[in-house]
Amino acid sequence: MEITSMELSELGLDRWLADQARELCKAEQRIARVTVVDRGWYIVRDGAGEVSARATGKFLHSTESTSDMPCVGDWVCVQYNEDGNSASIHTVLPRKTFLRRKSAGKSLEFQMIAANIDVALIVQSCHYDFNVSRLERYLVMAKEGHVEPLLVLTKTDLVSAEALAQLIAEIRGAGINTRIIAISNVSGAGLDQVKGMLGPGKTYCLLGSSGVGKTTLINQLTGHDTLKTRAVSDSGEGRHTTVRRQLFVLEQGALCVDTPGMRVVGILGAWEGVDESFDDIHALSPGCRFSNCSHTNEPGCAVLQAVEGGTLQQEHYRNYIKLKKESELPGRSYPDRRKKDKISEKGAPSGMKHGNKYK
Image (cartoon, rainbow, N blue to C red; front, side, top):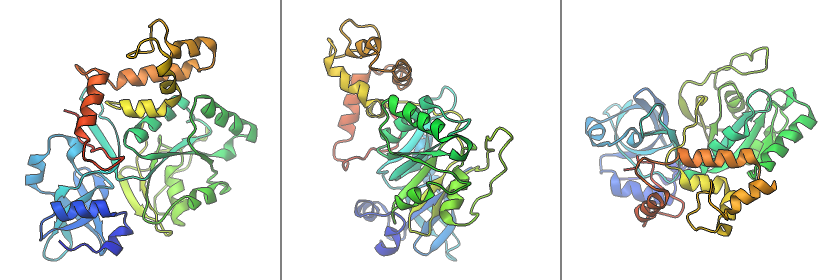
């Protein structure tokens, strides 16, 4: 299989992924990146351009869960039809990083948001949407998938400088040290900081609730009205516009994924992400009397002592316990789950985990 590395590298292909393609794609197939997912059909892009695509019946039969299906940002092995206007997806290459959440309802399945993402831009409005607990959920999602997070606070024109400083202090008070960029899509303040951190060939994904300004930010980054927006309500709350996940190539060479707003960010099997997102609590654990301390009611718990002493915020602690419990899978203890994860990841490149359903 021939790989045009210069063109595909601009779409985010690196040496490891190219090696995977050479191993998994057949001679008649080419490698492409999924740029749009919309109700069972796809758009894929290679160095020559974009075409519509469908997964083959054989591929669909071989999938064990919905998380095995192609998602935006995936690299896939495709075979183009004779006129080159459409393609069939035969294989999804292993994912280096991923963003996923628990599927709606009682199903123990993951819903894939995007794959092979370098940085997740977690977008929250300074006005109606601001919520530290929800922010912590997005951080767990990003860190579980080995994606670097960046916090973007939008609509700064709707709050005073003092109120903005208070919001940032609230984030820092919860032990969150992730970089923060505050922007105004009205005045343009802070947009240069966002543009300045975008690197060519790197993939970024916007995460956040409906109406926080993700679509407007995409339009600001592309320099024109790539996506439609709707007027905000009298309260300053935005209105939902994005209905599908889509990857855009920006003028400066970066790639950006826009996603529909998320009302619920369910967490499942994300112990590593919880530990990394709540690293201040995790750092206290060695001081507990018991090595398997759950930090809920055990005597000699260093975490509970920090809460009682006022050095650890109660709301931050309660959200940690809630997310840790939410991450549990029926019949699987935390130590057993982590042991299995470590075994299954042997041989994978550093910082990589597959996005398949837990078995």
